Image (cartoon, rainbow, N blue to C red):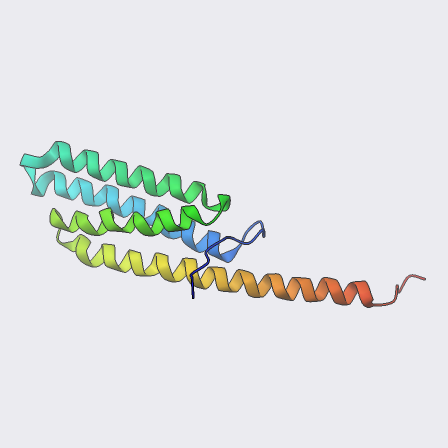
Length: 137
């Protein structure tokens, strides 16, 4: 079964809310990890800042385009890899990166499921209201 992450047309869907929140929080963690790596690995400061800031900005940008289809959710999943690999310079990021990756995947998948269920309930309510006799007449 293929995983479908196409967002709901719902304005404030659970999938978008969960995913965007996790991505923005993760961007802050990456920025602070870059500050730590700046002191831990003084020989690679330029690489650390380039990698870290590019990853943090990509995470924030990805959170802003989540309503444009399924591809931003897949991009968010792909962006988990550079976050985890930041563990090369800051060992705590192995644990934090894997934790955030798990949170993001769970939020995107479970949020999609919740939005599908809400959309089905809304459609059933609209159908029931359309079949009910008009109370004002």
